[in-house]
Length: 517
Image (cartoon, rainbow, N blue to C red):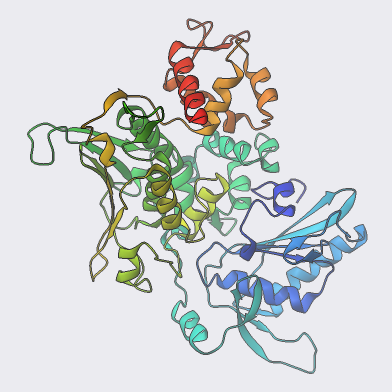
């Protein structure tokens, strides 16, 4: 227990930024019956969101934690943890034991109870801890509350009996050696987990159990599928065709020429690699200058933010039991993202077609959990809304969402912006330039007047997590040719700095031009 820690940042959790509000409860003090009901509800994981967290010692007002925390007496912590252990044996069926971790926040002791979605749901617990009453019931999460499951919700919960999402199941073909300690460490550093400081002191099994990617008994530990999907160098060994294929048809789908590139590896890495590949090679901005007005139109053939959201959703919601890749098809007329199978049957086809679909349950609860911690998705059924918002900002045609009655597939079709094709009666300047993110623009702006080293850049950008700086700022800027090393022959030199390139100057000038229009 000495090194026990959460796989996410305690500061972000307490401030309500690490997970969405329906997955976290704040409790001012220790109320065993009330907290038991919340443990039962999170363990049932009715919507496959990945369970949740109970923060004891912190009160809340209107869903917002009240800080500094009221805290718990230090001598309460051991007693509460022993009581939690006893409740897991005697007050919840099947037996369930959450992970409890003491912390000190603002010199106050608190206890965080991490309740991952259970493997043997549905769970029921005692309604009251009074020895005179012996009533049991099922609890689920409704918005930000833990309530009894009644009527249709109860029937649906019972229908989930012993069903565990594929990404949270044990994989009996893998061993602990199939996990990459380096990948785990990079992830923990990026999400600012306290575990990152302890990874060299602990065994891979201890770290894996605390991250809930390893389960089973002490004498027979088993990897969970999510651990292999995220932290194996070759997850396709265990889940064939776990990949994203990008196919470009320069002459259209019926042409004889096409370019194809396969992306394999940990899920979060291939998402980032595919987005970078598409951004570098297939996204371009068209600047249209008109003779009768000073303002120019600047449009992208496809908005990056919409593609990012659609691709992440495809990886998040696909089935890893179906041996079909996520596929991105690009022509001069459209960009299409295809995944298998389609949405849950609780989502109506007419809502899918209209772009109003809201899923009641997620197919992969653990993938969503990790992608949310990496800020690659929100996981709140907001994907289609974010896509439509990005499309509207670029003035592009509305996307088309498709599936069939059997929900065999899900397809998102992005038509190209008409102004990047129809350029009659206009003076056109077309730039094959990357649709750079705001993070990259911030970095480029910092080195506009003077080359700077990594530490200085992170200080100016107010970044403390090196992986975030590398993935979201430095690497995209280097790959897009917006900055360059001052010592390219010695990339790992401790005196290495980064300077602005001519291309970077052009991008900055374009941004300034857009701002002045």
